[in-house]
Length: 332
Ligand SMILES: [Mn+2]
Image 1 (tube, rainbow, N blue to C red):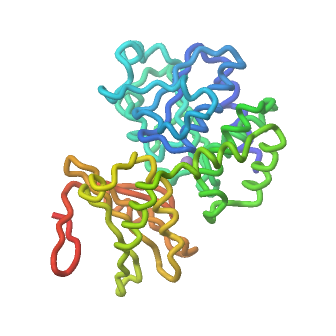
Image 2: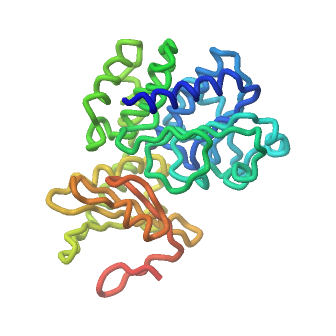
Protein backbone atom coordinates (compact mmCIF):
# COMPACT_ATOMS: atom_id res chain seq x y z
CA UNK A 1 0.00 0.00 0.00
CA UNK A 2 1.41 3.39 -0.93
CA UNK A 3 1.95 6.33 1.40
CA UNK A 4 -0.94 8.27 -0.13
CA UNK A 5 -3.46 5.51 0.60
CA UNK A 6 -2.14 5.03 4.13
CA UNK A 7 -2.67 8.76 4.67
CA UNK A 8 -6.32 8.47 3.62
CA UNK A 9 -6.88 5.87 6.33
CA UNK A 10 -5.15 8.12 8.87
CA UNK A 11 -7.22 11.13 7.83
CA UNK A 12 -10.39 9.07 8.20
CA UNK A 13 -9.31 8.11 11.71
CA UNK A 14 -8.63 11.74 12.67
CA UNK A 15 -12.01 12.85 11.30
CA UNK A 16 -13.81 10.19 13.32
CA UNK A 17 -11.93 11.07 16.48
CA UNK A 18 -12.87 14.74 16.13
CA UNK A 19 -16.51 14.18 15.07
CA UNK A 20 -19.35 14.96 17.50
CA UNK A 21 -22.18 13.01 15.92
CA UNK A 22 -21.65 10.35 13.27
CA UNK A 23 -24.07 8.81 10.79
CA UNK A 24 -23.03 5.33 9.65
CA UNK A 25 -24.87 4.14 6.57
CA UNK A 26 -24.73 1.13 4.30
CA UNK A 27 -26.73 0.08 1.25
CA UNK A 28 -30.33 -0.93 0.80
CA UNK A 29 -31.04 -4.67 0.96
CA UNK A 30 -27.80 -4.99 2.98
CA UNK A 31 -25.74 -8.11 2.29
CA UNK A 32 -23.24 -9.84 4.57
CA UNK A 33 -20.42 -7.47 3.72
CA UNK A 34 -22.54 -4.33 4.20
CA UNK A 35 -23.77 -5.53 7.59
CA UNK A 36 -20.38 -6.80 8.73
CA UNK A 37 -18.65 -3.56 7.79
CA UNK A 38 -21.19 -1.38 9.59
CA UNK A 39 -21.23 -3.68 12.67
CA UNK A 40 -17.41 -3.58 12.91
CA UNK A 41 -17.53 0.23 12.69
CA UNK A 42 -20.27 0.36 15.36
CA UNK A 43 -17.94 -1.61 17.64
CA UNK A 44 -15.22 0.96 17.00
CA UNK A 45 -17.66 3.82 17.77
CA UNK A 46 -18.72 2.15 21.03
CA UNK A 47 -15.15 1.57 22.19
CA UNK A 48 -14.36 5.23 21.54
CA UNK A 49 -17.58 6.54 23.13
CA UNK A 50 -18.62 8.24 19.91
CA UNK A 51 -22.16 9.45 19.42
CA UNK A 52 -23.46 7.65 16.32
CA UNK A 53 -26.57 6.53 14.46
CA UNK A 54 -26.37 3.46 12.18
CA UNK A 55 -28.80 3.14 9.30
CA UNK A 56 -29.76 0.89 6.41
CA UNK A 57 -32.90 1.35 4.32
CA UNK A 58 -33.97 -2.28 4.64
CA UNK A 59 -34.17 -4.70 7.52
CA UNK A 60 -31.14 -7.00 7.79
CA UNK A 61 -31.91 -10.65 6.98
CA UNK A 62 -32.39 -12.75 10.12
CA UNK A 63 -29.50 -14.95 8.96
CA UNK A 64 -27.20 -12.20 10.24
CA UNK A 65 -28.67 -11.95 13.72
CA UNK A 66 -25.48 -13.57 15.04
CA UNK A 67 -23.43 -10.49 14.10
CA UNK A 68 -22.43 -8.34 17.06
CA UNK A 69 -24.18 -4.91 17.10
CA UNK A 70 -26.71 -5.87 14.42
CA UNK A 71 -29.49 -4.75 16.78
CA UNK A 72 -28.06 -1.24 16.64
CA UNK A 73 -28.75 -0.83 12.92
CA UNK A 74 -31.85 1.29 12.37
CA UNK A 75 -34.21 0.78 9.46
CA UNK A 76 -37.80 1.70 8.84
CA UNK A 77 -39.74 -1.17 7.33
CA UNK A 78 -42.79 0.89 6.36
CA UNK A 79 -41.35 4.27 5.51
CA UNK A 80 -38.11 3.04 3.93
CA UNK A 81 -36.40 6.22 4.97
CA UNK A 82 -34.34 7.64 7.79
CA UNK A 83 -36.59 7.89 10.88
CA UNK A 84 -38.29 11.35 11.19
CA UNK A 85 -36.20 12.50 14.11
CA UNK A 86 -32.87 11.80 12.38
CA UNK A 87 -34.13 13.18 9.09
CA UNK A 88 -35.17 16.45 10.78
CA UNK A 89 -31.80 16.59 12.53
CA UNK A 90 -29.73 15.50 9.54
CA UNK A 91 -27.69 18.67 9.95
CA UNK A 92 -26.56 17.50 13.39
CA UNK A 93 -24.34 14.81 11.83
CA UNK A 94 -20.94 16.37 11.31
CA UNK A 95 -19.57 13.15 9.84
CA UNK A 96 -21.25 10.65 7.52
CA UNK A 97 -19.54 7.32 6.88
CA UNK A 98 -20.82 5.43 3.85
CA UNK A 99 -19.92 1.75 3.66
CA UNK A 100 -20.05 -0.63 0.66
CA UNK A 101 -22.32 1.56 -1.52
CA UNK A 102 -21.45 1.51 -5.22
CA UNK A 103 -23.41 4.75 -5.63
CA UNK A 104 -24.79 7.32 -3.21
CA UNK A 105 -28.35 6.42 -4.28
CA UNK A 106 -27.92 3.01 -2.66
CA UNK A 107 -27.78 4.74 0.74
CA UNK A 108 -31.35 6.06 0.23
CA UNK A 109 -29.91 9.37 1.51
CA UNK A 110 -28.57 10.63 -1.81
CA UNK A 111 -30.52 13.90 -1.65
CA UNK A 112 -29.67 14.60 1.98
CA UNK A 113 -25.99 13.85 1.34
CA UNK A 114 -25.79 15.97 -1.81
CA UNK A 115 -27.52 18.93 -0.07
CA UNK A 116 -25.39 18.70 3.07
CA UNK A 117 -23.90 21.69 4.86
CA UNK A 118 -20.24 22.58 4.30
CA UNK A 119 -19.38 21.39 7.83
CA UNK A 120 -20.75 17.89 7.12
CA UNK A 121 -17.92 15.62 6.01
CA UNK A 122 -18.46 12.36 4.11
CA UNK A 123 -16.07 9.39 4.21
CA UNK A 124 -16.68 6.52 1.83
CA UNK A 125 -15.30 2.99 2.19
CA UNK A 126 -16.05 0.92 -0.89
CA UNK A 127 -14.78 -1.74 -3.26
CA UNK A 128 -17.26 -1.24 -6.13
CA UNK A 129 -16.28 0.60 -9.31
CA UNK A 130 -16.83 4.34 -8.85
CA UNK A 131 -20.10 5.71 -10.22
CA UNK A 132 -20.03 9.29 -9.00
CA UNK A 133 -18.03 11.62 -6.80
CA UNK A 134 -19.74 12.64 -3.61
CA UNK A 135 -17.45 11.89 -0.68
CA UNK A 136 -14.94 14.32 0.82
CA UNK A 137 -12.63 11.41 1.55
CA UNK A 138 -12.85 8.30 -0.56
CA UNK A 139 -11.25 5.00 0.38
CA UNK A 140 -11.92 2.84 -2.62
CA UNK A 141 -10.17 -0.26 -3.91
CA UNK A 142 -12.00 -2.28 -6.55
CA UNK A 143 -9.44 -5.08 -6.35
CA UNK A 144 -10.27 -5.85 -2.76
CA UNK A 145 -12.62 -8.71 -1.84
CA UNK A 146 -14.90 -6.94 0.60
CA UNK A 147 -15.52 -3.58 2.28
CA UNK A 148 -14.86 -5.48 5.51
CA UNK A 149 -11.28 -5.91 4.26
CA UNK A 150 -11.00 -2.10 3.96
CA UNK A 151 -12.31 -1.80 7.52
CA UNK A 152 -9.53 -4.20 8.55
CA UNK A 153 -6.90 -1.90 6.96
CA UNK A 154 -8.54 1.08 8.67
CA UNK A 155 -8.06 -0.62 12.06
CA UNK A 156 -4.56 -1.92 11.30
CA UNK A 157 -3.13 1.32 9.95
CA UNK A 158 -4.52 3.28 12.89
CA UNK A 159 -3.31 0.71 15.43
CA UNK A 160 -6.81 -0.07 16.64
CA UNK A 161 -6.87 -3.29 18.65
CA UNK A 162 -9.15 -5.70 16.77
CA UNK A 163 -11.36 -7.39 19.37
CA UNK A 164 -13.36 -10.58 18.93
CA UNK A 165 -16.50 -8.74 17.78
CA UNK A 166 -14.59 -6.85 15.11
CA UNK A 167 -12.83 -10.06 14.04
CA UNK A 168 -16.17 -11.89 13.67
CA UNK A 169 -17.54 -9.04 11.56
CA UNK A 170 -14.49 -8.79 9.30
CA UNK A 171 -14.37 -12.54 8.68
CA UNK A 172 -18.12 -12.63 7.93
CA UNK A 173 -17.82 -9.79 5.42
CA UNK A 174 -14.93 -11.49 3.65
CA UNK A 175 -16.57 -14.93 3.56
CA UNK A 176 -19.92 -13.67 2.29
CA UNK A 177 -18.47 -11.35 -0.37
CA UNK A 178 -16.04 -13.98 -1.72
CA UNK A 179 -18.56 -16.87 -1.49
CA UNK A 180 -16.12 -18.54 0.93
CA UNK A 181 -12.95 -17.73 -1.06
CA UNK A 182 -14.52 -18.82 -4.35
CA UNK A 183 -14.45 -15.52 -6.25
CA UNK A 184 -11.30 -14.30 -8.02
CA UNK A 185 -11.26 -11.23 -5.73
CA UNK A 186 -9.83 -13.60 -3.08
CA UNK A 187 -6.18 -12.61 -2.71
CA UNK A 188 -3.33 -13.88 -0.58
CA UNK A 189 -4.12 -10.98 1.78
CA UNK A 190 -7.80 -11.98 1.97
CA UNK A 191 -6.80 -15.40 3.26
CA UNK A 192 -4.11 -13.97 5.56
CA UNK A 193 -6.54 -11.47 7.09
CA UNK A 194 -9.12 -14.25 7.57
CA UNK A 195 -6.57 -16.38 9.35
CA UNK A 196 -5.61 -13.43 11.57
CA UNK A 197 -9.30 -12.84 12.37
CA UNK A 198 -9.60 -16.47 13.49
CA UNK A 199 -6.59 -16.10 15.74
CA UNK A 200 -8.28 -13.02 17.23
CA UNK A 201 -11.37 -15.05 18.10
CA UNK A 202 -13.58 -15.05 15.00
CA UNK A 203 -15.73 -18.18 14.97
CA UNK A 204 -15.59 -19.71 11.49
CA UNK A 205 -18.02 -22.60 12.20
CA UNK A 206 -20.63 -20.21 13.62
CA UNK A 207 -20.33 -17.94 10.58
CA UNK A 208 -20.71 -20.74 8.03
CA UNK A 209 -23.51 -22.31 10.06
CA UNK A 210 -25.47 -19.06 9.85
CA UNK A 211 -24.62 -17.90 6.35
CA UNK A 212 -24.41 -21.19 4.47
CA UNK A 213 -26.14 -24.08 6.22
CA UNK A 214 -29.44 -22.29 6.49
CA UNK A 215 -31.53 -23.65 3.62
CA UNK A 216 -34.97 -25.17 4.13
CA UNK A 217 -36.32 -28.06 2.05
CA UNK A 218 -38.55 -25.60 0.14
CA UNK A 219 -35.49 -23.45 -0.62
CA UNK A 220 -33.50 -26.45 -1.87
CA UNK A 221 -36.40 -27.37 -4.18
CA UNK A 222 -36.60 -23.82 -5.47
CA UNK A 223 -32.83 -23.83 -6.13
CA UNK A 224 -33.45 -27.04 -8.10
CA UNK A 225 -36.22 -25.38 -10.10
CA UNK A 226 -33.95 -22.46 -10.99
CA UNK A 227 -31.16 -24.82 -12.06
CA UNK A 228 -33.47 -26.96 -14.17
CA UNK A 229 -34.60 -23.83 -16.06
CA UNK A 230 -31.03 -23.00 -17.21
CA UNK A 231 -30.62 -22.38 -20.93
CA UNK A 232 -27.46 -21.51 -22.86
CA UNK A 233 -27.62 -18.90 -25.62
CA UNK A 234 -25.18 -20.35 -28.22
CA UNK A 235 -24.52 -16.97 -29.88
CA UNK A 236 -23.08 -15.41 -26.73
CA UNK A 237 -22.33 -18.65 -24.90
CA UNK A 238 -24.24 -17.11 -22.03
CA UNK A 239 -26.53 -19.00 -19.65
CA UNK A 240 -29.83 -17.62 -18.41
CA UNK A 241 -32.43 -18.82 -15.99
CA UNK A 242 -35.55 -17.42 -14.40
CA UNK A 243 -37.48 -17.25 -11.21
CA UNK A 244 -41.09 -16.21 -11.65
CA UNK A 245 -43.66 -14.95 -9.18
CA UNK A 246 -45.45 -18.27 -9.66
CA UNK A 247 -42.28 -20.19 -8.66
CA UNK A 248 -41.98 -18.08 -5.53
CA UNK A 249 -45.66 -18.63 -4.68
CA UNK A 250 -45.34 -22.39 -5.18
CA UNK A 251 -42.27 -22.77 -2.94
CA UNK A 252 -42.82 -20.59 0.11
CA UNK A 253 -39.26 -19.50 0.96
CA UNK A 254 -37.77 -16.43 2.58
CA UNK A 255 -36.09 -14.30 -0.09
CA UNK A 256 -32.89 -14.52 1.98
CA UNK A 257 -32.78 -18.27 1.33
CA UNK A 258 -32.02 -17.45 -2.30
CA UNK A 259 -28.84 -15.69 -1.22
CA UNK A 260 -25.92 -17.32 -3.02
CA UNK A 261 -27.86 -18.94 -5.86
CA UNK A 262 -26.29 -16.69 -8.51
CA UNK A 263 -22.81 -17.43 -7.22
CA UNK A 264 -23.59 -21.13 -7.33
CA UNK A 265 -24.88 -20.88 -10.92
CA UNK A 266 -21.60 -19.28 -11.96
CA UNK A 267 -20.00 -22.69 -11.40
CA UNK A 268 -21.56 -23.75 -14.71
CA UNK A 269 -18.66 -24.95 -16.84
CA UNK A 270 -17.55 -23.33 -20.09
CA UNK A 271 -19.89 -20.32 -20.35
CA UNK A 272 -19.02 -16.62 -20.45
CA UNK A 273 -21.44 -15.90 -17.65
CA UNK A 274 -24.88 -16.42 -16.23
CA UNK A 275 -27.95 -14.27 -15.70
CA UNK A 276 -30.76 -14.95 -13.27
CA UNK A 277 -33.94 -12.96 -13.93
CA UNK A 278 -36.20 -12.79 -10.93
CA UNK A 279 -39.71 -11.35 -10.85
CA UNK A 280 -40.03 -9.58 -7.53
CA UNK A 281 -43.72 -8.64 -7.70
CA UNK A 282 -44.99 -5.09 -8.36
CA UNK A 283 -43.78 -5.24 -11.96
CA UNK A 284 -40.06 -5.26 -11.18
CA UNK A 285 -37.59 -7.78 -12.56
CA UNK A 286 -34.24 -8.13 -10.86
CA UNK A 287 -31.32 -9.30 -12.99
CA UNK A 288 -28.29 -10.93 -11.42
CA UNK A 289 -25.13 -11.37 -13.48
CA UNK A 290 -22.20 -13.58 -12.54
CA UNK A 291 -19.12 -14.87 -14.29
CA UNK A 292 -16.15 -17.02 -13.40
CA UNK A 293 -14.39 -16.10 -16.62
CA UNK A 294 -11.28 -13.99 -15.93
CA UNK A 295 -11.67 -11.77 -19.01
CA UNK A 296 -15.39 -10.96 -18.83
CA UNK A 297 -16.51 -7.68 -17.20
CA UNK A 298 -20.24 -7.97 -16.53
CA UNK A 299 -20.46 -4.61 -14.75
CA UNK A 300 -20.47 -2.99 -18.23
CA UNK A 301 -23.58 -4.94 -19.20
CA UNK A 302 -25.20 -4.17 -15.84
CA UNK A 303 -24.52 -0.44 -16.29
CA UNK A 304 -26.03 -0.50 -19.81
CA UNK A 305 -29.17 -1.90 -18.19
CA UNK A 306 -29.23 0.82 -15.52
CA UNK A 307 -27.53 -1.19 -12.77
CA UNK A 308 -24.00 -1.64 -11.52
CA UNK A 309 -21.64 -3.77 -9.48
CA UNK A 310 -18.39 -5.63 -9.90
CA UNK A 311 -16.79 -7.15 -12.99
CA UNK A 312 -17.60 -10.67 -11.79
CA UNK A 313 -20.86 -10.00 -9.94
CA UNK A 314 -23.32 -7.28 -10.87
CA UNK A 315 -27.02 -6.62 -11.20
CA UNK A 316 -29.80 -4.39 -12.48
CA UNK A 317 -33.56 -3.93 -12.18
CA UNK A 318 -36.05 -3.34 -14.97
CA UNK A 319 -39.78 -2.85 -15.10
CA UNK A 320 -41.89 -5.48 -16.79
CA UNK A 321 -43.10 -9.00 -16.43
CA UNK A 322 -41.88 -12.28 -17.83
CA UNK A 323 -44.03 -14.00 -20.41
CA UNK A 324 -43.46 -17.48 -21.82
CA UNK A 325 -43.45 -17.55 -25.63
CA UNK A 326 -42.62 -20.21 -28.21
CA UNK A 327 -39.06 -18.91 -28.50
CA UNK A 328 -38.59 -18.82 -24.74
CA UNK A 329 -39.10 -16.22 -22.01
CA UNK A 330 -39.64 -12.60 -22.98
CA UNK A 331 -39.87 -9.46 -20.87
CA UNK A 332 -42.97 -7.40 -21.64
MN1 LIG B 1 -19.26 -5.68 -0.59
